[in-house]
Image (cartoon, rainbow, N blue to C red; front, side, top):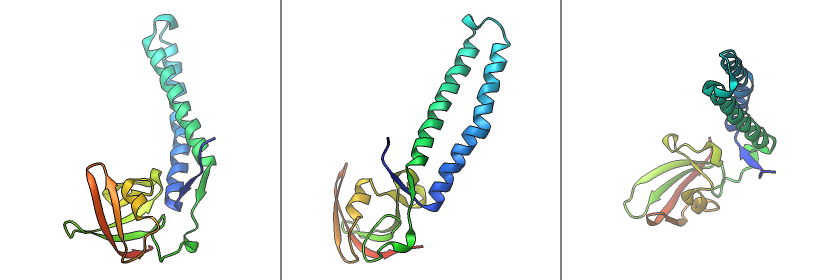
Length: 158
C-alpha cells in the first residue's frame, strides 16, 4: 500500500484524466498493436510482437500504479487552511536575504509541482523549509549548493 497523497481539485482531475486516457485510449491501442504484430507471422522470431507485448506490460504497470495512487488520493479542503502560516496550497512571497530578490511560489503536493508555473513541492528543500513559517520569519534552508535565507513577506490563497 502506498502512502496517502494530498491533491488540489486541479491535480486530482489531472490524475483521473490521465488514468482514463490510459484505460480508454492507450490500452485498446496496445491490444491492436499486438494483434497487428501477431498477424505478421511466426511469433518466435517476431520482434515487433515482442515489443508490442513489452509496451503493453509497461502500460499495465503504469495503469496499476496510477490506480493505486488514485485510491490513496485525498482532496485538500482549502476552506479550512490556516492563513497565518505557510501550508500546502499557500501562495508565499519570499525575499532572498542574500541578493534581495523577491519570488512568489505556491506550495503543492509533489505530483503537482511545476517550477515554470511557480508551483513547488512541499517535499522539496525550499518547500520543507517554508512550511509552518509565518510572515516576518526567516527560513534558513539548506539546498544542494549551500544555505539560503528567505524572509516570508506574504502568505495568501487564490
